[in-house]
Image (cartoon, rainbow, N blue to C red; front, side, top):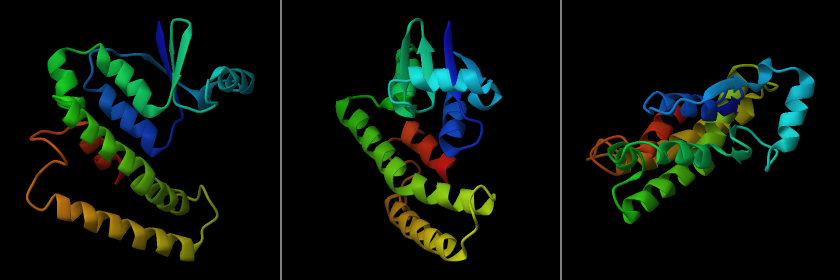
Length: 168
């Protein structure tokens, strides 16, 4: 039995759930917020990186959004793998490049905005204004790339495109 442990609210959790809709492999999903405190603590102790999301496959554990999705996508038909990850090593590497860029440059900004606006963090107008300014700069750079194309890399949505859409 494969079980995926997720938090309830966040860009990464939403991204994982969107991608799962395209996959034939459907792990059982458990929300860590719904577990008793003792179970949460035990689960995080077992996690190799002490983080979520966490995928339990038999007696093994995988943490991190991209390692988990890569594992789940690896059992999909070849066409699905190529569509989401890339057709050759260059496209796969470029897809990973954009995933890393979105994760390191855009996610922190959108998370800051989300936490500020949803009251999950003490509201700070100066921080919010700076985050919005930073997001506009990042989106301008992406807009330049997308000026004459529909998707970041290929002719259809890949994992990096789905992640970008979920992030913004």
